[in-house]
Amino acid sequence: MKFVHHPDAALHRPATYFNKGLLRALPEKPERVGALASLIEKRGHALIRPDDYGSAPRAAVHTPAYLAFLETAHARWVAEGDMGEVVLPNVHRMQAAPSYPTSVVGQAGWHMFDTACPIDGNTWTATCAAANAAVHAARLVATGADRAAYALCRPPGHHATRDMAGGFCYLNHVAIAAESVLPTLRAQGRPARVAIIDVDVHHGNGTQDIFYDRDDVFFVSVHGDPAEFYPHMAGYAQERGTGRGEGYTLNLPLPIGSDEATVLATIGTGLADIARFAPEILFVSLGFDTFIGDPLAAFGVTTPGFARMGAMIAATGLPTVLVQEGGYAIDALSANLSSFLDGFEGGFESTAGA
Ligand SMILES: [Zn+2]
Image (cartoon, rainbow, N blue to C red):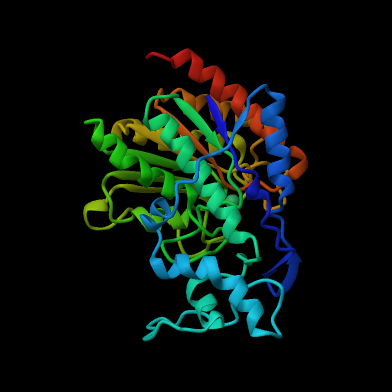
């Protein structure tokens, strides 16, 4: 198993975001990757630096206007004068917005669906580095070089849609990685079919949105019930895909306060559906904010519980790409990843060759 990370992922460091009427400290801190990177090295793994895959993988998922906005927004924002330190919207996209705005203030409203995705001078560099890590990990698995790989991505990505940032996310790294392997699979004469299971405590609304009309990417998300939890407007059980994608989205929302046994059993339900779909590669949006001690906590998963989660995912026997998403209990992050890897690597070795 290989581990991929680019140190530029730590450069993004906006101090604050606007939440429930208050300017609050951003829990999505660079220290998160520091904790995870040192744990990986302590376990004896090298951190592979990803190649630069350029703009094509990003452009296969996100719109040109959104990518241009992400890349240029902070410099244009600062150049306006009399602005805050980070890009945050103060207008919102109208329901039937007739015209794409030209100003950076207007575009911030167009391309940001909440106020939890502040852009600073290094956000673009960091999210591109994370996208390259996810693509690199996916390539290692798709080419058969490795049966599993982990991409240490930051900021997270699963809330970002084709053309909107939100929930600490800018580029959707797991979607970019999943999309990037389909041509490789086709070239190998294999079915171009992958699955994504999102085990972050929040619904992967962006990933769902990107693949909602597709039957070649099966998306499963286990998350806190959006009736009472972020992102509020997506992640309900009745959302099942559209057009040829109907039936290829599976949402398994759980009540806030669900205990570990419930969360793991529900992930098991999702994995069973994925096994029936028979993907060539399984992608995992791996968030540790299901942890019982997470500051955004909604579920009761314990540190030993992550080992069981890892073992369940490994037991699918599928080539697997793990992409880091959320997890904000910084003091417990390395123990939680370590536990997950104990279960995953142990299980993966026992299914190798199966
Ligand atoms: Zn999350």
